[in-house]
Length: 398
Image (cartoon, rainbow, N blue to C red; front, side):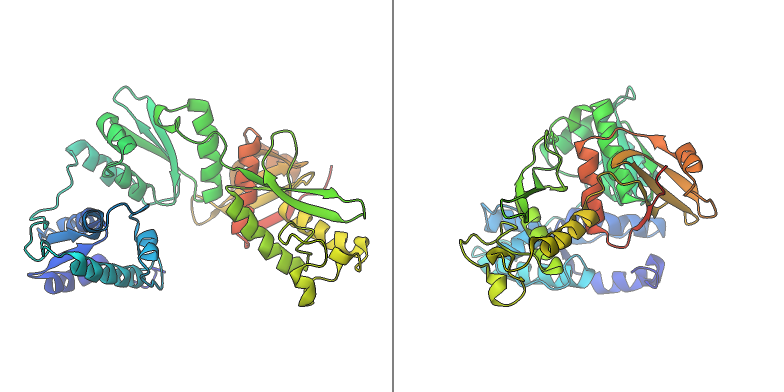
């Protein structure tokens, strides 16, 4: 999206012109203003403007909201947002929110500039600035160290520089503790978000950093199971994830599981009744609109219905499969590979584009072994569901 975008120095003069004698209004203005000042500093220009933060104003004028993120706040206030997470869409949403705040400000404290900050400069020490400036905006795993070199926090991000910036400027209790102890940050570039997620999960379990301990024990709560009913139909059922039973796939919460089920019911013409989406003793709703072939009334033979269920299971489960998942690498001429053997995650590695990796011996030589557990299974299955264009290669059975 940014391939054809202008460089900062090309628009810097225009930014100076349009912000002259103006107050910059932004949702979390400290972050945006700091970025602007940093970019101007690189050009040798001291950029100074007054700012107003719609997060802080909202907390004062619209208290007790469950969340003050732009998306959730505008939704709860009934402010229509188009093009979410795009510059124009977020900017217009902020404009509408600010107009509402101005209307709610009966004391006119905003107009009187009682809340306005004459200089928004984050209380970030020299060490923090040095750390942030040295980091790249890449996908990978990062490690926050204390003065003795101990790892106090491990995370993954699609933009390590941005994420560490958040850690070192956020006002949450955990972030403040990290800010007091951080001495350095190291990182491992992965290129692939899937590789970063798997490495993050294993590294947290191995190192047990002090500020990762509040992390949920399991990153998923619900799972999709199947069983045969008395009439020979394969029933799909969403339930709380259990350690003993092997699921088809797992989900972070019940809502994401139900959203997935509605999608696959439509994709495979499955019965809402036999997938738990429509509780009835007769036919399901889809039968009335001819999108269910009558399995709910035993009109469709169980064999043909089960065949479509098996196609779904085959697509979303890698149980007993020998395969590799190929994703982005750390550089343009490199790819990452996730190795699954007999349905078990064996590890991951990187290979050159010119390298042939379908040979099992060559594949095993470049793979770094990693632990297979419920978390890694969930990470891989969830990533496969979200990324339809991933290259998956089935390997010949030995």
